[in-house]
Length: 187
Image (cartoon, rainbow, N blue to C red):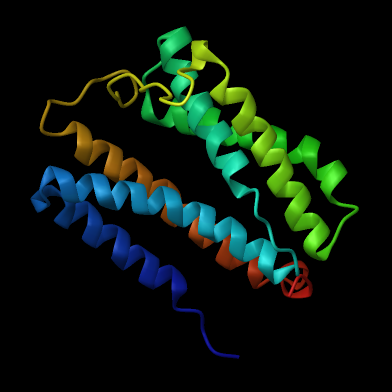
């Protein structure tokens, strides 16, 4: 059996991003941060596809996570990046746990269309809700790290570093899971 080089590669990518991120322009930091967020969605879809499930409703969980992070700041004044990430992950995880009982009975196109239908129900509720910004949504508070607000030039880098750390850690976790007997059985 060959040795897995994924952890080393992920460590090198993280180190390069943390060191090189300081020299990126603000717009590039923003794009890389969004790429990490969307990459996490793709990672989840990859796990579903390995299990033989095709989802068209992944936007539901992405949306719930984003609204949970935004609502935490808007309604409770919490602006810590990691607290917002945890709130978003918890909201999406709770929804996945609850909806999983309904979706677990379906396979193939039925799973995909039911997941899409649930996603569209959430979209319909959000569009009609003016308290949550209707079709415009709402912004999150300026980011802090553990209660400290970085300087204006460092905020975007701090968010990029936090996103890279979380996303690459989850990549390591998924890689480890896929190398277990349970992960191999899902293929």
